[in-house]
Length: 269
Image 1 (tube, rainbow, N blue to C red):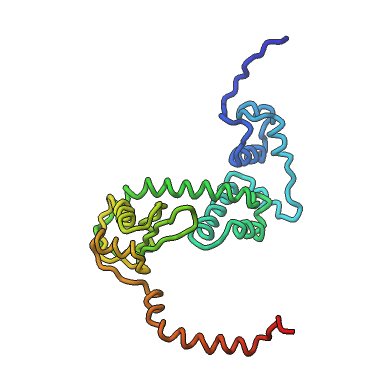
Image 2 (cartoon, one colour):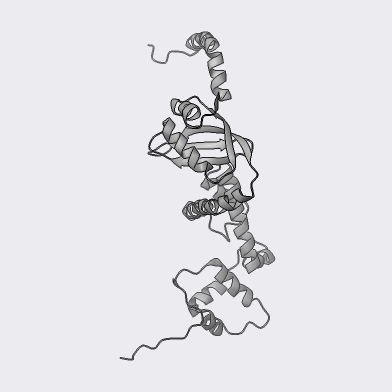
């Protein structure tokens, strides 16, 4: 049996089976030049299997697309442009807006970019999860740096609980800047838990809370009075609801009676 021999490769990879899009774009740019040299030499210099490089370069262009546009989108500049487009779509539609992942994929398909970037739900879900994690890490890194440059200010907080998991999510937002000061899961939502969550969010920030606005949940009322020791104000929706209570019931009765008179009884006869 012939003993194995180590091969000298200038570039080593921790996972050679998972090549990234920039690797493909660099190869495409190189062999788009007038005198690119041999594929074998390029593959050896960059540690790419010869068959893998060949499959990249033999990839057929979409028949219904402009060849010049296709060449650009497969270049390094085009790959960076596509990356910005996809990330901007996620940040604008999915993170800041109320758009689901499937609509992001539909946007890529209608823009006819699905020939160049993955637009399936599975691929986009993986990217969305990674992007959300990276955004959280970025916020943890940037908040202390920006806090040092921030001028002291007094703010109002609008707080509420969200229920989309095993534990309530405590959310407090500054309404002028739309900045989410507090966003965390807790097992409880009493006054002490709310106070601790908000105080942890205020740590390191030159900010003083003067007013807490909420739906008058008991925990938030106690947080305002005993925890933060600030003024509490009910939100507009619940104030309007309480104000209209004496009127809603008398108005609802004739509406229900009218429905009984106009809707036939399907169970009769």
